[in-house]
Image (tube, rainbow, N blue to C red):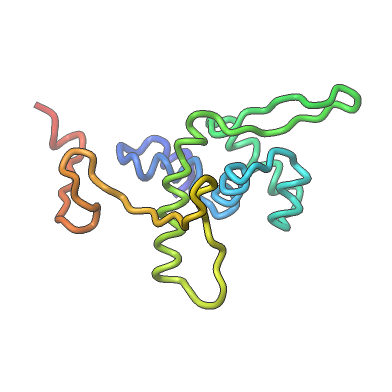
Length: 149
């Protein structure tokens, strides 16, 4: 299944994976939330090949997760900043990290701290309507065809 096919799926999970569904894209977004903005910063942090980084940054920019801003005219250089959609992705990154800490732990792990309080962030997903923790109650998936009058 390719990203174009996923973009046309009615499932919002599939559509989201079309934009940020590979490890490099998720790690670029992680680093952008940590304050990295420049190509060389991402390349150094991730150890990623420049061609792959260029492609992932272009995709994240085209999909509205990052936006380019020129920081130098001579030579022309641009940096990448999170958009509102990119900033809204932070809780998803934390939920992935929470799952990884629980199911893929072993050895020393990076910790994420609240910058003001210094306490470790413990992400949890809560249903806004019921207040229940997601994953503690059965779910039902309703396709667009099933919900049509």
